[in-house]
Length: 151
Image (cartoon, rainbow, N blue to C red; front, side, top):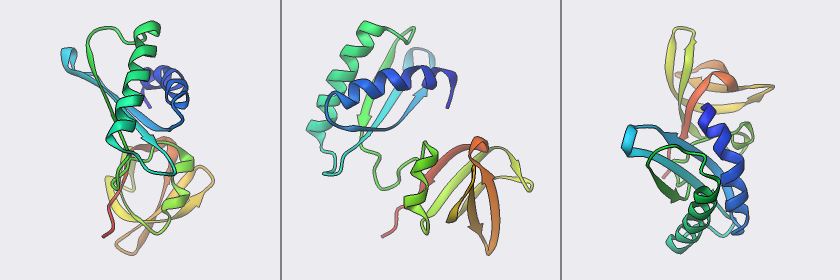
């Protein structure tokens, strides 16, 4: 997570919790006047458009008061979807056996992009099998991890 995302997460989490939903994760994409704050929410009963609108109103009101983002930005609220991003260490275990796309900050055995099956979590790392070879990737080295939808 970026420094900005770390600052925003507790503010957004509290606003999302007030609506009865769970914060799955946030992304803040800085792009001048076109910056985007993406808020992903989840719930045991699923997420609908009305749920996203309700959370958007709540988060927007809290951000207007707290004002943690300088400049203009667009707030987007959605469900994590089938191709969900994995933001936290605890997001990984339910997806053991699923295919993931993983991008690392620093190379692991000479590569930064991986597409493979999540075999497990060992300590502070994931075990990803790619082409019958296992890679141990530390959580702190994961820049982005996304579930590949299984149909």
